[in-house]
Image (tube, helix red, strand yellow):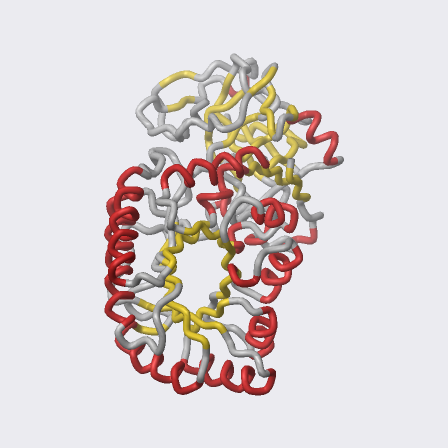
Length: 435
């Protein structure tokens, strides 16, 4: 099913409510890509093999996030058919650190990237191999560095300060820190939803200073293993991902000449996006596959000891999750339908448009227990908070809904609950389930 925003007056929308008659939608506006990953039975969305109404009863209350195990496995399997066999697939835990989900991913991916000691604990508790865990972040505390050294994971160095502190920790504990260098390259990741490399950045070490840093690592006796280049995320253009990965490889190859030991790992980041908004198209993986195959062949000759790594977050988990809230009121204000729910931006900041969007756009949304309803209308879905920012869907074409019906926000498996201000206005937190 595809979903359309409705903001201009072209076509009538049938509605049984006299107050709402005359609402319109535009047939010219772009559609969301179909959310076909979830089946529909008897008009209800099915998640993890369970109809939405029954799942809501099992959870016990709304709002909640639900993540589908089968879709997580399907996405990893899809990538396995695309990535060359020598390329290792890592999960960026920041996208979704739910412990049960991370535990499930242990059996699917080759490794993990964490961004805090809290995430490290979750991954270690889940049984991940410490040798396949890396730690990135520009503000690692001394305590976090000590924990990382003790755990035996790979630390992505992002400053000269980290080198000196790791040297002291290694000497005090007798455990040599395993390190890679996070490089801030001299190019930017074009068309990226979030740019994290190129130009002045708080992330990594500027590429022109990396030779100096590598010399410091060598003098400190740290266990150098490789390079980490993470230049951006949420990109839907294969050609820009290919260009960035080629540039990243060339930067690493050039810097490898200054390394104190052969490169063992080269994290070329991922940046793979998913379609969120009207007009977005799914990422074409074929050019990326071909490019990674070519890079793997080059690496076999130019950096034969290096394992190539692709690190993905939202691309692995984003489409496997939904956010579900219940309609508590239906209001008509000057001809516009408002569906008021028990959810809101405190659970899902991104869907409100306040997590990186410059101009707010709608996520795909639906009335999850009325997926095949023939009577439709244009409605705006809002949350329970006392702020006009609490907007979940603005003037979207959807099934006519009543209090008690269930609103579903798709593409919610990444950067959902943990990226939201849960304590805002002191409403109850959302629940998370893996089904």
